[in-house]
Amino acid sequence: MFTIATWNINSVRLRAGLVERLLREEAPDILCLQECKSPVEKIPTEGFRALGYDHIVARGQKGYNGVAILSRLPVEDAGDRDYARLGHARHVAARLENGVVIHNFYIPAGGDIPDREVNEKFGQKLDFLTEMRDVFHEDRPARSIMVGDFNIAPREDDVWSHKQLLKVVSHTPIEVAHLSEAQDAGRWVDITRQDIPEGQLYSWWSYRNRDWDASDRGRRLDHIWATPDISNAGHGSRVLRPVRGWDSPSDHVPVFASFDL
Image 1 (cartoon, one colour):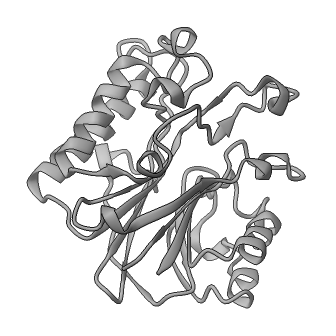
Image 2: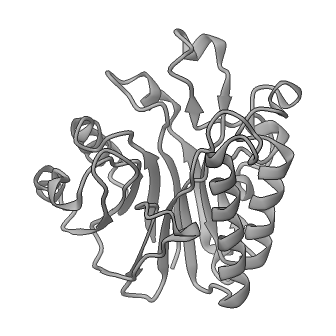
């Protein structure tokens, strides 16, 4: 059995101490980070290695984007893809010794206006998702786990108010449809909702809400999916809501799942 976690850290250099705290207190076997905002060579790996995370696969970018996989288990670099040809560090993959491939994604947020004609970033997000769909159609994944900040809350109970967020980027019908098409193309199973099928569930709370806990206007933007050949091995899903209350936190919290593989 191994445990995997995904967390948009919103600057790994600024919040290296929080990463180390999570590794000490929760000890996932694999931690996938997004929005690292650092070139690979400047990721503060010393503290992670001191805690037993000797295997690191990452793609970096100065000040923006960036994805990293920290692992206590041996992994090999399984490559990356420049989705939508944006030139962004938004995907990296690693292969475990048992052949399972871990994909770590940071899907574009999409800006503020859900209209590609007036907002280039929204169009980039839709193009990114379309290419994911096409890649999964062309080469259907097997024995794979896909995690990351997808920047989409697909279900009505993945947001604090379905009606009020229908025209807000991250929950618009067109985004949800694009994500669903990518999911269907790879036959991906949402492990979190397999384990926790009912009820409101969030992994992100805006910095704009002074008392995020009391207002609780959250969204489930962070996901753990698996291909159907291994999805039944997934269990133990949890969202670490208290992490949002740590000192100088990310606006996202870690999402966990375990796999008996």
